[in-house]
Length: 360
Length: 89
Image (cartoon, rainbow over all chains, first blue to last red; front, side, top):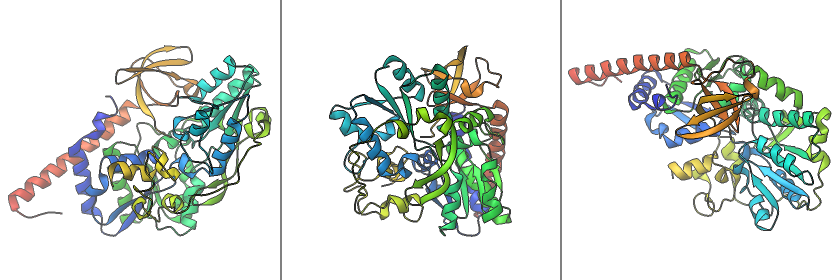
C-alpha cells in the first residue's frame, strides 16, 4: 500500500463514471474549493468522463489567488527595509502586487528567501539575530497550524526577531458567502487536506442552512470520481449531508492537536477575499498574547504603494465559479504562467494555470 | 498550497520523522501528531515540513475493496451490453 498508484486505476475511474451516468438525471453544478482538486480534475481530464448533466466548477480554493494585492504590496514594503529578511513559500514569489513582486525586489537586492517549511524561517531567525525575519503566512487550515507551531516555538525560545505576516484564512465562510451571493452550486467537493486538520464539523452548516451536500474528497482520480458519485446520490435522493470520501486521511474530529495549537495562536477576524470582498471571521489573526510576533505590529512598511488592480483580469469572477478561465480575454494571450497578470495564473493551484496547462 | 504527500516513515528521531517519498528523503516534524502511535513503516501525510495526519491502512483497503465491487459491476454490464448488443446506460 503506497497510497497513490492504487487510487489511479483506470478501470475504477471508468466504472465510477458509468455509475454516475446511470444515476444522474438532473443537471448539477458541483464546486471544488481546493486548488489541489482543481489541478487533479484538469490533469486527469475528469470533466470529459462525466455525463452532460454534471458540471464541475472551481471555487476560491487557492489561498494565493484570493489574497489581496495590498498584502503583496505590504510584503514588498517590508522587504525594502534594510534589516528585514522575507521568508515565503515559493508560490507567492511571483504574485503581482500593484507595482512589484517579491521576485523583482529580490533581483533589486532585497533579502527574500523561499522556504519549504516555516521551521526553516525559524532557523534563519536563530542564525541571523541582527535581522528581522518575516514569514509570509498564507494558506488555509492545512497550513495555519504549522505557522502556529513556529510562533509557539519562537515564544518558548524567546526569539525577538521572528515575525509572521498572517493572511491565513478559513474555508467555511467563503463557502457560505458563495451561496449567499446566489452562485449556482448544487454541492461541494470538500477540501481534503484542510479537513485532515479541521474534521467534518466545520461544514455542518452548509447542509443545515443551505441544503447543499459536502463530500470531503481525496486527490486521486478515483477519489474525485467517487466524491462526485456520492454528491450525485445525495442530490438525487434529496439528502444533503457532510460525508467523508477521503477516509484514509480524514477523521470526523480532524487533528485535535493541530487545532489546539492553531486556536492558541490565532483568533478569527474579518478578512478580504478576491471576488467575495470582506467576509466575517474568515481570517486568522494573531492573538494579542502573541503580538510580539505579528509583523504588522512590529515591522515598518514606509514605502507601501497605493493599491492598483490590473485592467481586464477576471480572477474574482473565476474564483466565484461564475466565469471560467477561457471567458477571460487575457487568458493565454496577455496572461500566461510565464508572464501572469492575475493571481489565478501565477499559482500552481490557480484555475487559470490548471486550464492553461491541461485544458487550453 | 494545501498539497500534501503520503510519505513512509523510515525512522523516528525524537520529534522528527525521517520519511521517504519515491526515493527522496524528507524530514517531517511530528509536533502535530504527538498523540499518535507511530512506527517505521507507517505512512503519514506531509505538508510544509510537518506530518499532519497518519494514513489509515484499513480505511484505504476498504476504499479499494469498494472500488473492486464497482469494477465487477461495470464489467458485468459491459458483458451484458456486448451479449444483447444494447446499451444499458
